[in-house]
Length: 402
Image (cartoon, rainbow, N blue to C red; front, side, top):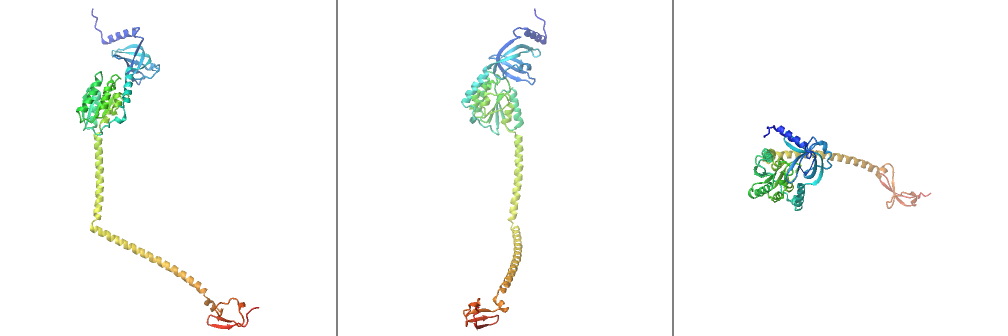
C-alpha cells in the first residue's frame, strides 16, 4: 500500500532522526584527504574529505578546533572522528567533527610535489625562460570556460581599461578528466593558428584542489613552457598555487588580476599623451621666443644701435678711468715733491759751505788732506786755509805740541 505523501521538510526531519539514532553513524571515523578548506570568521572550519571517487562535507565547530594538534591545510590526509548530521533546510548531510588525526600527505598533494620537483629539476621554472609580457598588446587570447565567472571578469576588466585591444575567447573545460588535454591543445593551437595574438591568459575561478587539478597536469605545464606567446596564469584565488603558475611567464593572483596585468589603461595613456603634447607646445613656444630674440639681435639697425651704445659706454668708462688716473698721478706727484723738499732741507743742512758761512774754516795740507789733528803739524809746514769767502796759505810757526 502506498504511503501518504509527505512534505520535503517532513522527509528531511525523518531522515535526520534515522541518521542521528544510527549507532554507527553517531560515532563514525572517516579517512580522507582535506579539500576545499575554508576558515570562517566565526572560528568554524568547513572542508571536504575525499578519496579517489567520492567526497563528503565536513564541519569542525570552533569549540573543537583547539583539540586539533596539527595545522589544517589542503591535501593532507586525516582521520576524522564525529557523527553524521543532516541540515534539514538544505537537505544535505555532513560529518560534524569532534576530533581529528593527521594521516600524512594526501595523494593529490604528493602528486603535486612530485611533479613540481620533476619540472623544477628540468628547468621549466627558471626565470631565464620567462618571456616578457608585451606592454601594448593588440590581441589577447583567453583560454578558459566560456560560461564561468572567470571569463566574465576578464572581459569586463579589459573592456573597462582598454578600448583598443581585441580579445579571443578560446573555450575549454577547466575541470574534469578531459580538461587538461583541452587546455594544452588550446595553447598549442593558438601558437600555430593565431599569429596576431600577443599574450595568452589561461585559468579559472576558485575551487577545491581537485577542481583546480587540470592546471597541475604535466601536459598543461609543458604546453605553457613550449608556447612562443607569453602566458599569464590566473587560477583560483590569491592563496591557490598550481604547477601552471610556476611555469607561466607571469602569475596573476586571480583572473581579474590577470586582465589588469595584461593590458594598459588606454585613458591613462591618452591623458599622458595630452600632458606630453602640452609640454611640447610650451617648450616649442619658448624655443621660438629665444630664436626670435636672436633674429632681432642680427637686425643691422638694431646691431648698429647696440654698437653705438656700447661705444658710448666705453667712452664714458675711458673718461672715468682718465679722471681717476689724473687724480692718482697728481696725488703721487705732490707726495714726491714733499719728500724732495724734505730731502733738500736735510741736504742743505749738511752742506760744508753752509757751515763755513757760520764763521768756520777748513785747514788742509798741501795735498788737500783735511787736517783734523793740529798736533800732527810741523814747523814751517805750509797749510791751506779755506773760509766761506776765499782761501789763504799759511806757514806753521808752532806745531802746537805741548
